[in-house]
Structures are given as structure tokens and as C-alpha cells.
Amino acid sequence: MSCIVDEIRREKEKQNAVILAHLYVDGEVQEIADYCGDSYYLSQMAQKTDADVIVFCGVEFMAESAKILNPEKTVLMPARDADCPMAHMATIEQIKKFREEYDDLAVVCYINSTTEIKAYSDVAVTSSNAKKVVSNIPNKHILFIPDQNLGGHLAPMFPDKEFHFVDGYCHVHNFIDPKQVEALKAEHPMAKVAAHPECAPEVRAMADYIGSTTGILKYAQETDAEEFIILTEVGVAHRLHLDNEGKRFFFPETRPVCPNMKKVTLEKVLRVLKEHNDPIEVAPDIAERAKECLVRMHQWGG
Ligand code: 13P
Ligand code: SF4
Image 1 (spheres, rainbow, N blue to C red):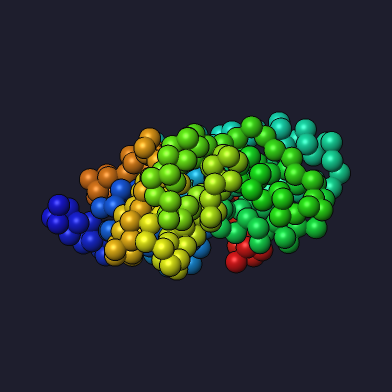
Image 2: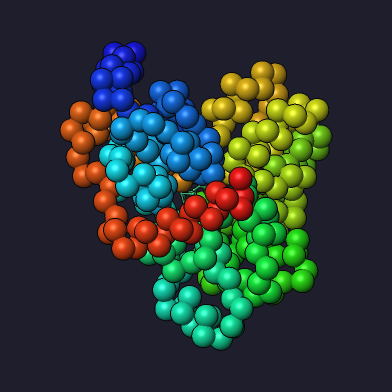
């Protein structure tokens, strides 16, 4: 294993490449990354980097966002087929229909959206900056796409606004079973419950803390408890254990695993670095419009 890690490091230095990894990829991939974090942190790192090549260990919308922010750089995905199903759960037709209906509509898209959807939206958000971004929007009507769970978590924070949703969700978080969470709570009555906002309302209602992947890590580190029930993708267990010696973390019995994030392997990282196969390309006209949506997110949510 160390052989492949050394080879990745050598190749990375030779090419002035940076490796970005989401916290849901396997621990050994997180370990070789220069920067590892949630979607917002990785988007910030992609915006700031002076590397010539970005290797994105995550899913397609993340790598496409990095390319949109850095059109002149080479952006590579080790698992080129790693896609987020939720990113395709809103349509341009839906956006157009809502725009026709409401004159003052602001279209807010979760960063987990295709480039086309970003091009038709006013601003993007991630789970860690959504509240801040929305608080900068003067419009009364908000079309929040595609995740109705994150949107449903946000809406009560803005009682003066009217939120509209489409039928979008993350199949990993949305199907965390409330009965399994109840069973875990009964088994570990002292445990604090931390949930991602992509979870369904009945699961979020059981949480002591709701936040992004990085938010959950921070909560576990800063909270004076020994046991935590973690309601997000199991990849976060790697950092939770590294950062919190002595604390115990429990996941639902049907472990929440994102099959797309798990497609990234060390072997694929090395291969894509060496071969530069199938780099991310985005059509310049939609890239330009999608960039405005992402730049606005960085301005309003930073
Ligand atoms: P965050 O990285 O914002 O926590 O989002 C989780 C996720 O599902 C990424 O696809
Ligand atoms: Fe998409 Fe859910 Fe996987 Fe994140 S965890 S990439 S939202 S399917």
C-alpha cells in the first residue's frame, strides 16, 4: 500500500497537482488528500488553489464545480462514473415554470446539482452555508432545489419567506430508518445525536445537532460527551475516530453508505494522475452562467 501512496505523491509533485477528497470517500483515500472536508470547504480550496491539476476524489458535481471555478486548470476524477443521483432530481422545466408563476422568485440550488441547473439558478448553497446565503436574499419566494430535506430544515429559519420545493432527496440520508435511530438511542441513552440536514424530517427531529459533514466533526470534537449517534455517511467515521480518542460513535444498523463516493480508490487516483483520462469539460456558455451562481455562493456564504 505504501508503494502506491509514494507513487501518488511523486506523481502529484511532478505535475503540481492537488488532491481534494470529500469526507465520504474511503479513509485511505482521505489520507493521501491535500485537503479533505465537506462540499463547501472543498469548493473553497478549489477556488484558492494554484495547482495546475486538481484531482477530485468525490462525485461529478464537485469536480464540475472545481472546473467551472478554474476553467484553465485540468480537473480529473479518479472515479469518472461517480455521480450523485440527487444532482439530477430538478429540471430546467420546473425552474422555468416557477419563474413564470412568481415574479420575485430566487432560485437557490444545492451545490449537489448539475452544471445546467446551476446555470439556471441564482445562487448555490452547501449544507454548511445555506442559512447564511439565504439570509442575503431579499426575495420573498425561494425555489429551493433539489433537496427538499435541506430546504425543509432551512425554511422554518425564515418565517417571512415562502419556500417552494421539488421532489429531490439523497437516497443515502433520506432512508435512514427512524426506528433504527430510536433503537440506538435506547441502547445508548447518554449519546448525543448528530444528523446531516439531508436526513428526513422525522430523523432530524431526533437530533441534538443538525449540520454539514464538517459541522458534525466539529460538534463531536467540541461537545463534552463520550458517545455519539452519527446520522450521515459512514466515511466520516475515519476522521471522527482520528480526532476523538476515547469517544465512541454509533451508526444506524443499515449503515448509510454512498456507493458513488466509495468508487474512489487509491489505484484509480494513481491511474488518473498518470493517464489524465477523460478530464472534466464543461461547455463554456453554461460554465460562465454556472460560475456566477457559485461565485455568488462564495460571496454571500463566505
Ligand atoms: P456536505 O459535504 O455539505 O456535508 O454534503 C454532504 C453530501 O452529501 C455531499 O454529497
Ligand atoms: Fe449524493 Fe447523497 Fe452520495 Fe452525497 S451522499 S453524493 S448527496 S447520494
